[in-house]
Amino acid sequence: MNNETMIETWRRLLDPAKSWVLFTHGTCVILMEPADDLAQQATTILREYGPVHVGSPAGDFNVITLDDVPGWAVTGHHPDVLTYVAPDELEEHGDLHVGLFGRDKRDRDGREPAVVHVEDRRPS
Image 1: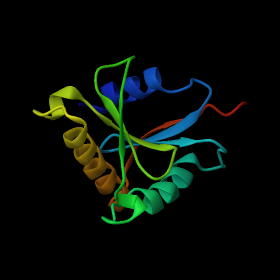
Image 2 (image 1 turned 90 degrees about the vertical axis):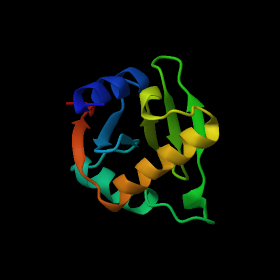
Image 3 (image 1 turned 30 degrees about the vertical axis):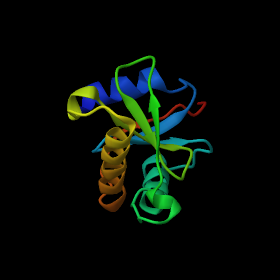
């Protein structure tokens, strides 16, 4: 999935009043209390809550089947960090396969965060 498609997917999924930052592998950090530098704020959150540590809350995930777009959002131990998984990324679409795949994407984004988009919805 290219970046533009991923950006449009998150725009369809998220509250249009919320600011958020998208990372290379599809992880989105929603900023409930946006700071001055949104990219830096999201990167700091993702560095802490993105990497997977098996056997800890950082290894946990939940899978949400999406209604507005095909695919799933995979959550972790931070409520504002979500990773999108498109149906064409996997052959198996069970919750376990989707969740592990999404968790791996979040782990990669957390270990090597690279911002691809900042959606700044702060009031002017």
